[in-house]
Picture 1 (cartoon, rainbow, N blue to C red):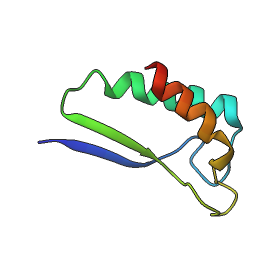
Picture 2 (cartoon, rainbow, N blue to C red):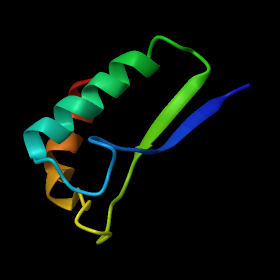
Picture 3 (cartoon, rainbow, N blue to C red):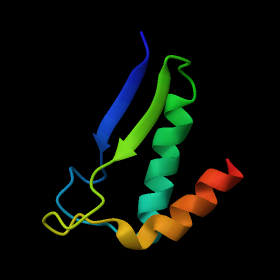
Picture 4 (cartoon, rainbow, N blue to C red):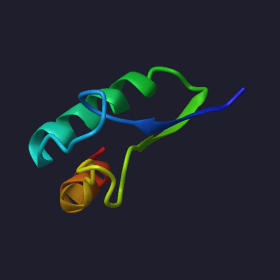
Length: 69
């Protein structure tokens, strides 16, 4: 059965850890889920203003990561 992981976050959520650490952490998640052919995607928590966990500023760096992987 296909699986999508939603609300993936770093540091137990609740805050944004910075662009570099965020992209590195999501890259680590990406490396792990690529090992399982039934996992078809992950979605980071949260894009938008929620208790300081907004990763909006990392969008360009995430786009670069996605384009190169």
